[in-house]
Amino acid sequence: MHDNSIVYENPKQRPRSLDTEKGQHLTENSKIISESGISTPRSGREDESIELSFFEASKGNNGILRRLTRRSNEGKEIDTSPPPDGGVRAWATVVLCHMALFTTFGFVQSYGVLQTHYVSALGLPASTVSWIGSLSACLMMVMATFSGRLTDAGYFHQTLAVGTFLQLLGYFTTAVAMTYWQLLLSHGVCIGLGGGLVFCPCMSIVGTYFSKYRSLALAICSIGNSVGGLVFAAILQNMIPAVGFPWAMRTCAFLVMASMVPANLILKPRVLKSQDAPLVELKAFTELTYCLFALGMFFTFLGMWVPVFYLGTFGRDIIHMSSKNASSLLLLINGVGIAGRVLPALAAHRFGPLNLMIPLTLLSGVILFCWAAVKDYQGILVFDVIYGFIMAAGQGMFPPSLGSLTTDVSRMGVRMGMVFSICGLALLVGQPLGGVLVTAGGGSYLYTQIYSGTAMTLGSIFMMGARISSKGWKVWAKV
Image (tube, rainbow, N blue to C red; front, side):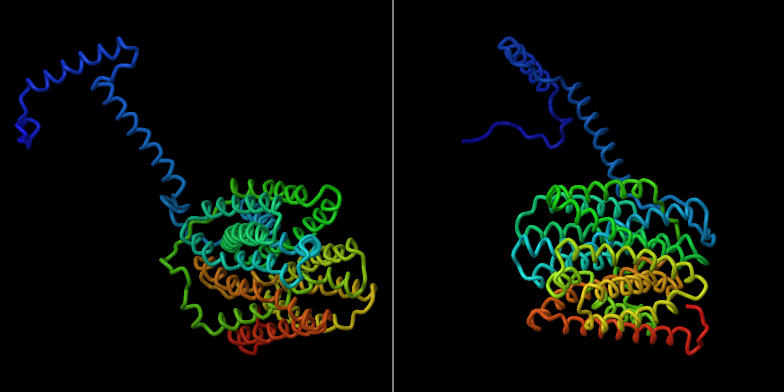
């Protein structure tokens, strides 16, 4: 069968009569459809109006998308002035970043309360349950590599907003989790990813606002760890027996929301000149100082948080304390940690943060060896107070020490993120390894105590090597 219709390559070649006939045909059909009660088709002019409206709406949506994905430094002049070293904007940034660490590692440092609760509720060994907290802490650190690079690239606001959303999602889903794998995903993965997108960008922009008082500013931010650990541990310890685990976690979520919404609205990074940089600056690992410091922090984090995870179960199983009193040990270690972070912060800008961190880390390792001698209630209280103070003092010097070794502030986010990622790997394996050693010792904590003390001692030795590489054997050199 042959098709007698003619195909016109150019629409203008089509006879006008065809258009007229087609129009009359459509008009007649429209009348028939209208009389049957069905809406009539739109005219060509109405179609053009609709297409124009759709185009304008699409253009508006694209404008919103561009605003959401626009870099914080786009269309703005590069700030070539030195860091302000003070002022309302700078110190407001410090306070809000303090709250960011309050909601991230502050919650991690309260994990000892949840460790005890999860062991009882799930009926699983401590070494298995500790993977939830260690995975969360690890992801917070590892994500710092990506969030730090995004911050340097100008995507600070987007990174902080996504991190806040994931944090809240993790808290609310943890509240309804019933099984181990659900807790591993909600608490371990979701809260960990969200925290990693929050804390590193905040820490990196604080360093750009200060020069002389950078160590003090970063140390004040780090105090948020201990304050958060104290507050979250108190909430969980008191609310889980009173109203149950779900509402205890929801209360924590509301507290995170109240802390992070102002941070998302107010925090503003400085617009600094930044060269294109890779996600991982491999060149940094060719610097001996940077490598030694990264190794030092790896071994330090391998053993530093073992008491934070296991002191509660140690008090319950070895000292035979009640579950509530055992959980109170975590409140005490975080409470004295606040003072432990404040005092070195006041002295850091005078003596140098790394100069303070090395002896504090070494002393923490020695105290962990002394943990093996704790046999009664009085002994564990003394250990709790002394270790909590010294450990927090040394940990508070970590960001300022890395900042003092970074000369190019525009690379602060990338370099800080890489070290945080290395520390995250230590946190991932450090706490479960401590639980395995408890099992290997037949319930005794001796192997775990020796392991944690040895790790921190090695960390202080590598940090000493980083200092010597940076300033030589000059005893009074500030670094």
